[in-house]
Length: 431
Image (cartoon, rainbow, N blue to C red; front, side, top):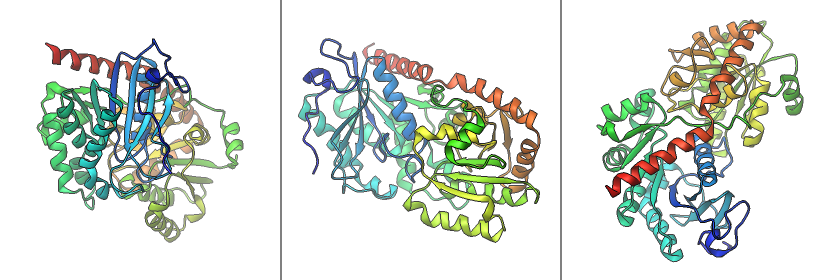
């Protein structure tokens, strides 16, 4: 049964919760952060849990540390989950009823956008809360954000994270519902500010969605360089029970066709027969079973199934061990708006071989922190992987440069930039 909870901020009730401000230290601004289809506290590696979850969680915590009161609204996916759950200073997740309290495919979640917006309003009304600003993540939240910003007469900051038009263009078999493209177009026209992670995304919004470039702000995504930090390779491998005598290639992320894991398996088959290597594929949940079965079948058909290990989803806190244990992190995606996995690997001092698509072209410096591959086919990936696997000095050089490059993506700088967007947007509303 769902627990009954006073939805007012801890600072107003006197029940501060872990790390939250005491009375007399009330945050200066209250933010309604919308993450409708997935919770920032969801286990990573599942079908709907990835870089965006990390972004929302880390940004909310950093903003809370800066005095903002952040409520992250998400759709309830379990009848037993608490309505409100703190997860950092002045930051908490609020689960609202919008459709059945169970996991749903994204297309089904989209049917409950209006109910989600209504439930967020009901929560605010019940607690007599007034939000200063709405910050939405992904197109479904953005559609709800338009309604909430209008109802509350507050600014709406939108972040898409991925764009339907780009996904369709990235892979010929990709399909996106027309409702998504229509909603993204409407959000691009109505949001007071749109935050993008790269100049590439800014260009796409202005050309394909005809967004006003003056309302688009580029703020890179972030990484916790204190958590994602190099661990001595032998130590990391012993902690994970991984062999010390093999070259390790690592994939981290969702198990879906757009991620290009089939390209990685093909590249493994194209490596020299005498290569002593193991490919670790981290990620996936029960809903990825069909895709995982197809990938296993591909590996078996190519005769490299003994080189491939499907690890499954792992706790986010253990990812630095996997990155540090690996010789190379491979990101063979057909589309990435930013490339959070690449930056996390770089922060751990691991070079990256990635597709030259979307944000990856900005985050990975070709020939310095790794290699960018312009073709989504196995052979060029295999060529660059062999080059790194066979040259210890080159790998070490790339790894050191990667760690240094990752420093510019630290969360404090990202949070300060987002806070400036908030301040500027709110100021513009009063002039």
